[in-house]
Amino acid sequence: MIRQLIRLVIVVAGAKLLALASAPAYAIDPQAGLDAEVIYRTEYPGLKRHKAMAIGPGGVWGNSYGYGSAAEAEKNAIKTCRAALRPKSWGKSATCKLLARGNKFVWSTPFMGASFDKALPLPDVPLRGAVRFWPKDPKLKGIVLALHGCSGPGNGVDAFVDSWFRFFQARGFLVIYPSSFDEQRPPSYCGWIAPENYRAFTEAVKFRAAQTRRTIAELRKSHPDLPLYIWAHSEGGYVAQVLDTKLSGIIIVGTVCGISRPGAMLVPRSVPILHVYGELDDKVIDGTKTMTRKYVDKLCGPRYRGKGRSWVIADDADHLTSIWRQNVIDAVSRMIGQKSFGLAESKEPLSLEGEARVAYEKSYLHIGKTAFAIGPGGAYCIAASWSNTEDTKQDALYQCARAVDFISQDAPYPPGGRQPCRLYAIGIKPVTP
Image 1 (cartoon, rainbow, N blue to C red):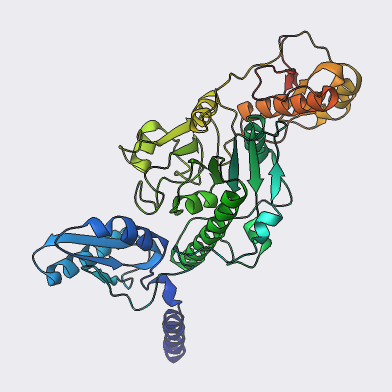
Image 2 (image 1 turned 45 degrees about the horizontal axis):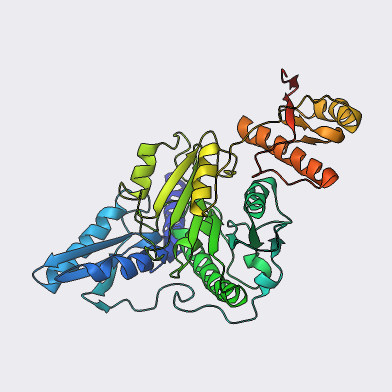
């Protein structure tokens, strides 16, 4: 019996050793990924005297500078990198190695992914197949190039992006929404970044950046005199922040400020950037917290405000932060050089009648938590499913206004200041007129 137990212990121990031996190297080996490259291109060149840079797994890095010898600089770069590794859960075997010594790149291979210095070759297949939102006025005020999140635009334009695109469209801007998946590209990864998916994240962002540089060049050829803005969501926000090119402005929704360090990005300082954050965006903050001014100051750096770089928080919004908050409308309007407007409901007396009554009684009352808006001529809308009351309410009003616009050919809302609809119910409870 004792011999059998000893044999079992040996077998179990051997299995554990085999598992450790076959564990993927990427979980502990240093990685020359997106974080290290951005810091190496932006921060590292300005460091003085003897300097060095080291890298670890999953985007971890460490700099040292101002030392009297190259050996001291190297030693302290490794030490700083290892200190950054300690809070991680990768085990004691995770290590750091030298990336650069002085002004010399000493890593054995190039940085991961596509080059930051080149655009992809033509043809631009995603641009050819892009969804376009043309304004009614043929005289364009500018172009907004929209960059989707990690999972792509899906099978169409959902209510979240539609709220943004219709806003730009109504202000006289052409919105162009390409899909990065229209050509062969690295696989995407949606989730928190760790060593096991860090290469996938780096390669996807850098490939998309090369796609976007190509598209920007094509748009400048076709519309050389028009302002060009970037609107970007989630992973698209990382892509936008590594575009080393002149733009009229960048609006980023649901992405941290900077790559690896607050404010660290390849975008020229002359390009204005507005970050839009949902107060409850658990893709940016810990799910147990809310986004506050103090938190964003930490996230973006206390000096991020002003000089063309700013941020705004949408109350009660999540990762899909829509345009329907007054402070967001004000901030975005300033960014694109347009006059802001106030959200409002119609003051006209409206009653539940015709198709609207049928839809309310037969369909809406069985749906649950949403909103119902009515307009003139029997127009109505049942809102899309949102995570908060304000977005649900504004979506109902907005989609109802689009129905009225379709019927009457009046100017759409927003931005005209005239909202033809009013809210009839939130949930199953009618709103008091």
